[in-house]
Length: 128
Length: 388
Image: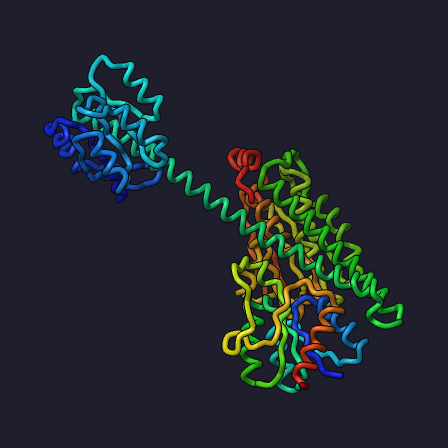
């Protein structure tokens, strides 16, 4: 069982993923902006963070990922975003040690059950 | 200063030099756009040489003699085919009307009869230059409009996908029962699905309002009315939401506020402003709606005791799809279109709308609408066709 930080500015996306993750036995911390996520991380230490990208700015989630990588170098992160489609990016963002230090990049929409499985898969991978 | 390139094609050296000299220092002002136009002249002594030059650097205006030694001016035009961004003025000798007609058919913009005076030359070139610049300007505006429309649609699609994503996510959970056995959890999810789909519907309706206003397809019916009556109707519309938030709405209007206006448009203005004043209020807050006549204007003030916003936020709210996002507004749904609709309507009444706000204290919108619309604004309302 893990503590999962969900960061998304859409209340319902946080709520639905919280419902499924909690049902699977995990503890969920929620933040509705990158700024709130930084506040949460000042006192709590989740096992994994799931980040939206377009929040306060179109790249708020990317900046947040780099900050977390700095402050919590061993915390795994998953990006969950519609940024590819929304911004019409002609290439795919790839996890990258320096620029985008996350383990997975998932394109919205992701069904809550699928996200929970992805999160658990990443946690298993980290353990091994 | 806009410098247009002119290529003079003539086998007589005297003619080429004469044209170059006449146009060399010639400038004129295009009054419609307020730009000064000048010319830089290049020369070719045959059709073949002209084609070579055109292939490397396309001139803006081609002054093409018809009677050339090898290939004729018409042959050159034939070879050029449809020249998009270049105007050809065909130079023909007297009594060759047929040539002129043939040239026009091949796409020449104009023709100039030989011999011509420097003034006739300047006038012909000026006419072509004006046409060319105005056409380019119109083309550029059309391209910008397409760009704006494209951006609008991209943002719109993104905004519509958010509620859709929320609804789909909940439906997945409901189908797979992946959130446990408590029925209350699923009831809450169904409730959220309804809230988000209502929000999506509101967005679609706002969008239709916006496009109707901008396309001028909404027929305006300007009638004499008392703005107070419409304000009261809007207050009734807002009442259920106000009740839910325990927000009291009061109307302050001592005298009738007569105006010539379209009922539907004024209703949209009031509905949007009151709905915002309630939504962004605090529980138990107030909304004060003040109406009065001030000379030629009808003054509308909507003041709330709500969460307010910063100056930076207030500066952006009339733009499409801009919503103030913070902890206070997290649970408030909106289309991001309401205020841009209000602003567009206010402009139809030659009016203005301003906002004064303080975070934590409240927001006041002040509108000034002309009580008797200008004929011009009325026409604009009917003819507008530049919407996204």
